[in-house]
Image 1 (cartoon, rainbow, N blue to C red):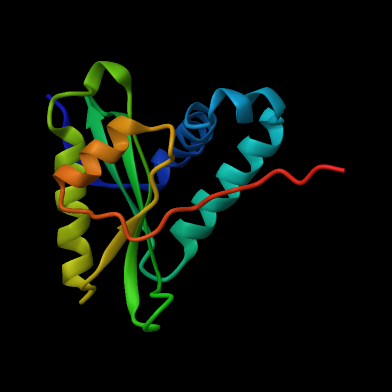
Image 2: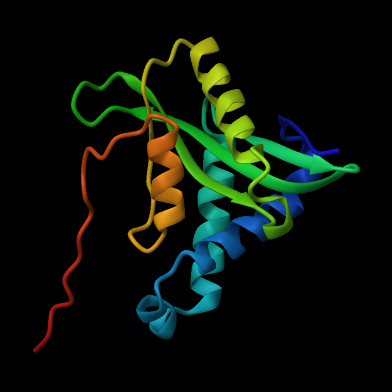
Length: 156
């Protein structure tokens, strides 16, 4: 039976691999066509390690039979408007065969409990525009849209 817990150092190789896989999977087909896998991988590793090493940074892991099958990465950073510390749910991943069982919800709940314990009153997350399931799940957990990131490719 799958259970949700805080990460342990022995989870790190798996977390690094899944963070890289997640970052690759959320790329749009257009982005994937031009992305360099080694760059995406290196950036995902750098982000994961920096978040875990930062004050208050942690990961929630779902395991089944002693092996990790999902994670939620949590960081703390200042609010852009107030400077107050806020939680940031940076990445979430569940192996496909574990989706739809409420495990992501359990990871979010434990993450929010942890942030409340730290005295954090606000949490944000970033959901890729090409991830409608992630957007739906965030709305279901009480998140609201407060900004939209856009890009433009400059030519000639």
